[in-house]
Length: 216
Image 1 (cartoon, rainbow, N blue to C red):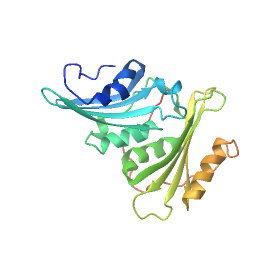
Image 2: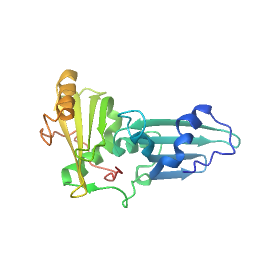
Image 3: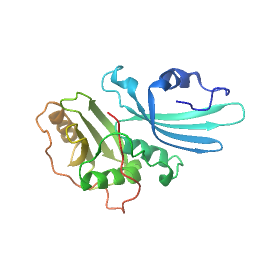
Image 4: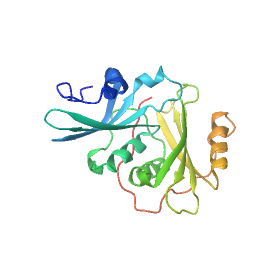
């Protein structure tokens, strides 16, 4: 993975946190303008590193003639990485994910929810996430808190992958309290709520963006 900064001065932390793992990163989307680059990356090193580290990396690099700066955020879902970059100046239409990698959405509800997360992701703060890459039951849970005044202030996202059909589904559960949201996460982690729970919309705003694709 080439970030085009080898001849530039930059923060040492970039090389320890990102550059060191560059050969383990797969670009799912990227967009470049003369002074700035945006990346959605799948970091395969997370499969062997710290347990439960989010596998997707949203990265923005700003360059000058002699140096560069960067911002990065590890996130549990690629749609969240897209949203993070869009709200830092990347055009939404320029950061659509590759369609030749990973499983496909298993239903239209998944596609619609991912589009809403891409467009409205900045309305929520992530409080907790857990990813299990076990092939027998691969899933991710994410607890979100609304940053504005919403009737249902907390959301739990549950992504599940079916390797037999090579598809994935994403659903959401509305929660009234942080305790309820964390309990929902725990129920899925402990296998008490596999493929269950009613969905409720994150936003009533028009759908924009593109559905996500992932690697696992």
